[in-house]
Image (cartoon, rainbow, N blue to C red; front, side, top):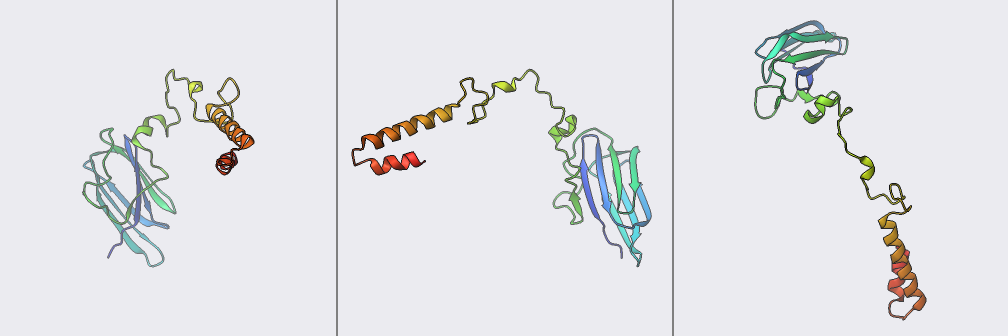
Length: 181
């Protein structure tokens, strides 16, 4: 009886990366059909344990533009999609995915990051980042050298000092608490 190897996958709008994790695989057979049928078989280990995989991919693929690479640790397959669009999942089967099928987070790129190569070439147009005040307290971006938050804290501190100096007895403890903060 055949076993299922661990399979990781990731996608872009135009392709799907399928990685079959099977160290020391021998007699590797790969078959990909335009309707999205993906078949893999191999043996591994000293006892030549057979491994097999038969997946119905979510949509049609371009067999001629797809490429495979077999090395000693895994089998990588770059499957070119027939249409450049994001798939909802890797396989047609709805519901819970098989336990041997996992997302390859090392290769994964979100749909909104796909066009910019992991978000590196994002176009912000004429947006001026210098106009942003991110709530800093070190005076960066503030022409007078201090932020609004610093000014508020200084004012509260002065009020607390004044209350302590005048001391009416009733608010001494509360005022000293404010000064400590």
